[in-house]
Image 1 (cartoon, rainbow, N blue to C red):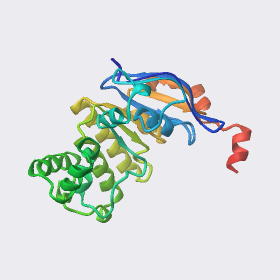
Image 2 (image 1 turned 90 degrees about the vertical axis):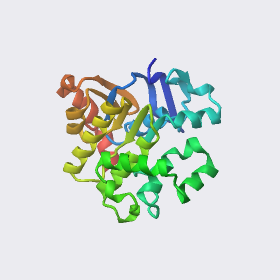
Image 3 (image 1 turned 120 degrees about the horizontal axis):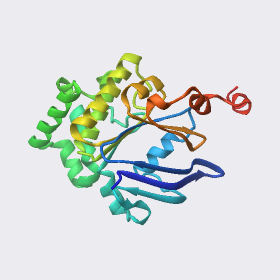
Image 4 (image 1 turned 90 degrees about the horizontal axis):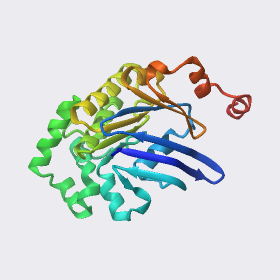
Length: 256
């Protein structure tokens, strides 16, 4: 049973096919980097995989279940198994690290319990969050407000929140776009290490091609909503890179 199985999946926004006839299988525990230029469809693909968007055409299965058949309640249950780190992290600045991490289980616990957990976090939850923050290297920030943290520390809180969900898969959309190269490398290294330690499937969209090549055994290259490369980093040729990243005359005029 695949973690994610897409067969000829298309998602349109008006006349634009953001994801165009994509067929893809990602196995449990696999680590995949989605690469390609801005606007290639990487973010939309992640939103399909975490079921925040539903496809217009084709079939998408998550852990063996066809999501098009899901009720809203079943989708919420499934989303508790697929943690997502959005591009802008999605943290609440005025809450503490502890409270932000506890929000990771908000979808599976319901509104009333989530509010109670924020105000009076259970002792077991505090211990679990402290352990996770220790693993990501910021255990001393347990009661610190998010607004007082650096960008790199906030990234680690977002990772901790995802881990607190105890997910079967973790998807991250450009998680290192706003930090310096050294912190970017540390963050990607941490994500891949955690995936190996805990056995969850990992899918990360990256603009940093060097990091994708260094840390991921499989790269999926997207361009104009289509998969134009799928394979090991060592098999990514100059021709493949040209197909992925070289702008046409029309695209250069659009960017001017």
